[in-house]
Length: 169
Image 1 (cartoon, rainbow, N blue to C red):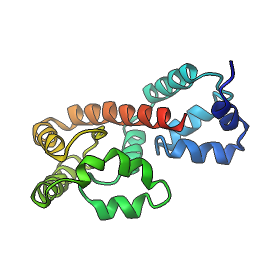
Image 2 (cartoon, rainbow, N blue to C red; image 1 turned 180 degrees about the horizontal axis):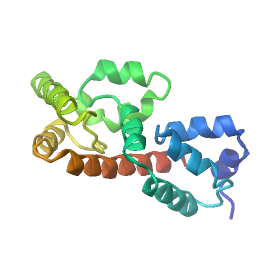
Image 3 (tube, one colour; image 1 turned 45 degrees about the horizontal axis):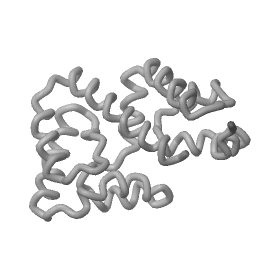
């Protein structure tokens, strides 16, 4: 049985295909690795190809992927960065948007400290998580080494990307 959404994705021009992948993960290397595997015949194959591509990323690729995310809790950044695809990130951070101002301020303040310490923004699969849970995770992860945190953020990036793939299809 064919998947009409996959068929449509495979029928896109190379540039249009890359634009769709951009909504999943902003690492250009990941996108190029995915592009090389066209056509994709099933969602299972799409996920496997994505997983294999993630395994080939280096630190610079991960940092590029992280840079494609708005800072959690910074709703103005979220709106500016994702005006065209804002439904994805806003849906992912919906629980955060409903948080108390004090919690949002703590998230924002600690996010800035995190960025200064690690050199990239805090990445977490925020889907369905209230701001208080995200703040707690941020507080716990803030003590990790940069190497540990880069690895944890990469795992979270993959979770976010897989959720976005499911939403795409």
